Length: 313
Ligand SMILES: [Zn+2]
Image 1 (cartoon, rainbow, N blue to C red):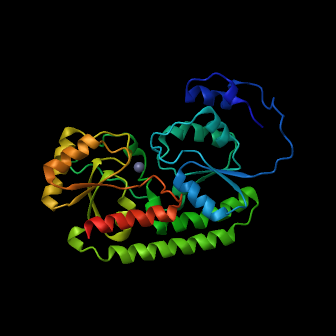
Image 2: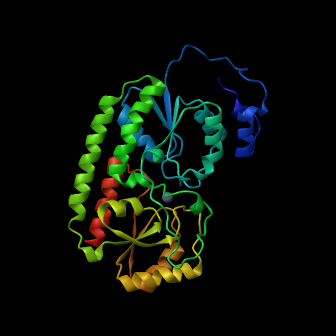
């Protein structure tokens, strides 16, 4: 049942959502194109989650990913047709922990409208965010309200999520995906073992990370690394670093002898280059939230690990 939100002139997400929360007052006015289409659709918010869901379901279910690959999940804002897509999902798979900042209102409306929602971070132990090293209040209010959303860089936590996702798909869509779930859990175990073998080459003294935003905490915890700091000292790319925080980070990099700053899509090149020239550290771009050309989550995490090892080893 479509409410035709796309046909109503709305300039803001709030307006579009008002249509869905009853603003059009009409209920199911549009019964057209109901030709017995039984295609079941799972809508995933991020490309990473879309890839994982596809791996689990294979061809048995249609999977749509809301955010285009390459967009920043922290700032993505949905269009009218994307809101329609969410409201019509048989299951909506989201990351949670404030990753989808620009989708929060739309997700709330989807839940109120009865769309079943699977929240990945409800199935893991969420990493708590620590305050900035100088004891200042975090720059971003979101830091008070939740933990670190970037769990997907830890394949062991992804196994927990996949183990819960399979039964959720079966319950909501009536499709048995146990074979896909088992196979993908094995792939995740293989990925984790390969990562462990790769990082074993890095001596303890070099296991220090500086990143674009605070995105590698789970990966670092899993593989025995320490995150010294980030160009944007927040788990959201939407925060900004103060000049004092930038100076503090440069000091830490020099003090700890960090050789590489891993920037990400969205990291301010000006700030990163300033820190690099002050410290002598080199800049290396890392994909954290963007899938590689083959569209595979496994390749993303494996490639990220190899890039870190190649530059710190
Ligand atoms: Zn992020």
